[in-house]
Amino acid sequence: MGIEYTDLASRVINQTSTEFGITHFFKDIAVIEFNGGTHIDLKAVNPTLKSIKKHYGSSKPFGIIANRVNSYSISLLDLKKARQRLPNLAAYGIVSYTDATRMNAEIESSFCEWKDICFNNLYESLNTIQQRIENNFSDSIA
Image (cartoon, rainbow, N blue to C red; front, top):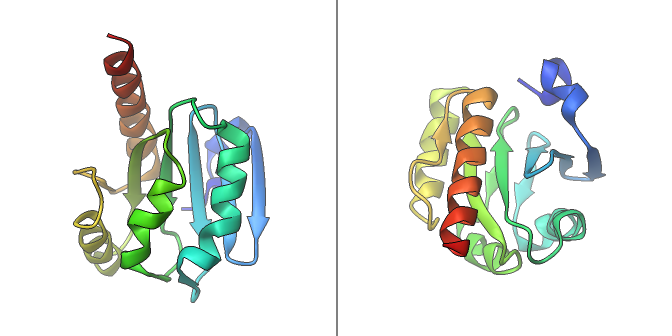
């Protein structure tokens, strides 16, 4: 379900749009909803990465959730390069709504540094990613 159809819409601080989708910014988490039928590679995601970096800066820990409300393809080999552009990314998750998107998310997770990134709904993902950000932050100052 897209954020605009949930009670979370009122908690969005800011949002940016590109030709490939929309990014909803919460305090510590960016939720990306890419458009259906698009192919997401490093070139396509670059404007999204720039808006995320502008919003969170280069030191504040934050998380990203890919809310897969639409079907799109992603260049798995570009994931590591995209990750390198966001050094303070502390947690990542994918919300999948169908068996096909869950399978794609599990394949994507094998290219990520994080484990257990697949979620069944937006609320579960937000709660878990927020906890991971907080744990990552407390580990870094301990």
